[in-house]
Amino acid sequence: MVRESAENRVYGLVNNLGVIKESALKKGILYKIIITGCMIGLAYRDKTGKFLKKIKNAMPAVDEFMPIEEVGFDSEPVRTDKKTAWVTISNGCNNFCTFCVVPMTRGREVSRPYEDILEECKELKKQGYTYVTLLGQNVNSYGADLILGQENIQAMRDLDKVYFDNPKHEFRNTKQASKLEDSKPSGLSRISDFGFRDLKPVYVKHLGRYRLPTLFPHLLDAVAKLGFKTVDFISSNPWDFSDELIDVIARNSNISRTIHFALQSGDNNVLKRMNRWYTREKYLELVEKMRTKIPGIRFTTDIIVGFCGETEEEYQNTVDLCKKVGFYKAFIARYSLRPLTAATKVMKDDIPATVKKKRWQELDRIVNFQYY
Image (cartoon, rainbow, N blue to C red; front, side):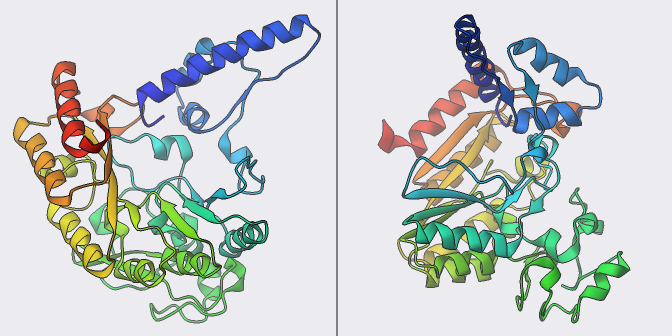
């Protein structure tokens, strides 16, 4: 659902499955097509019902549309690869970038219990898996809802409401507050109710204030110490990338030295319109810090060209930043309208398709030249 082209591919795939289903039925074989994931999440969060009607019309062969919440973390994934495993650590997103539909498709960020993740990884190690990737829409903020309680996390990043002047737990729920033996930022101790123990939350100081707490550096460190050949993670957000996380990567040689570090734009004005709470300067600072502490590190990224109002100068600032970083690979997309996003509601998709295509082709050649 992040890209319109991906949504269209789903329609094509399901219609092809419908032909197989109909052919099998003539032979007395009954197949059932069930659709879940981001597309259905959006359909059930769209109160107008228009999107659900649209996908039902587009995929008449579907028997059931199942919200992803009904799948949950308890369903063991089907793995055909016996060496590489993807391990989900969270689902949903609280960031609300103006171009992105994920908060509407996946809902608010929900972290999987800490010990459940470790137990799954331990079992994978016993089974002979050598490569694991920790998955989340924003892995850096993993555990914030476990620490603060999901109802205490602001969905929109309003500076006056979301950022703390001092890194301390602020509970509006007195029952949750009573569970804490020590609510100071110096540590969380013996909070067995939340599935982890003796872990001090990590706060990332950003724009002069402390943001939401995270347990991801602890989790990544613990998984790396299980002895896998390679531990990877995706996706990470520049505004939650803490010094502690960098240190964890640096001291564990089996953590991947290829970091996916989503940029989206190299221009500060575009980043602001995108509701991305970092600047090009901060991004470059983090890249340099990681290169200093982690020899051999390389970066992949996501970039959108042709976002609402993007001028030629703003686009060239993205080109300039890409040349400065020297990305190993970039996944470059042309901006497209997505339902229910802020950009679709209040901004104009005013960059001509020909200009988007030209910028996409040019930037792809500059960054991904080794693939040509």
